[in-house]
Image 1 (spheres, helix red, strand yellow):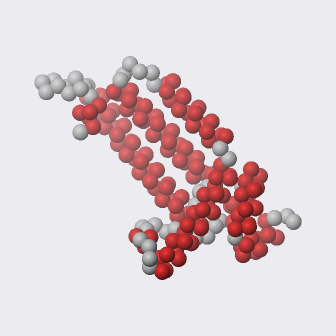
Image 2: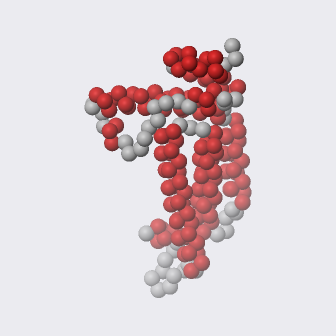
Image 3: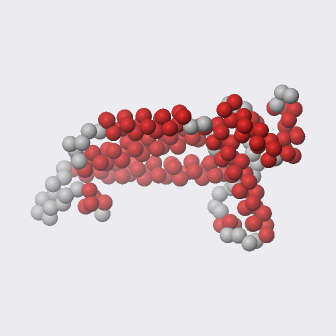
Length: 179
């Protein structure tokens, strides 16, 4: 069905070469694999929290998907330039990734995820929520050692984290913080 949308089709004679058809099928198959990888890493982040390496995996998945979408567009319009568009996407996305405070984002995401998971657990126990339909494990514990070893860019978030969870922070105060 998508093939008819992207390529002109003549009932008497196909205007596309077998090479173009096979490349089209290959690119669509690869895009399916990329979407599957994104879904799997999203489930993994939902279960175990965000880390720097998982952010870079999302970035790599985004870039690979962008390359194959541009290739798909190039099959449709062969006269268009491929490299300038790809270079623009890589530079813009890398600039966004570089200027973003990744460590602060990781702590915020993991704290919000932890609070949401505890709230979902309470609702499941009470039985007044449809969160019982979750098909994957949701972590209800924070990885304190990982979150406290992040860079100094996330120091304010680390102190906010210690204020939000006073029980755990008392246990870890002397272990990780040099007071």
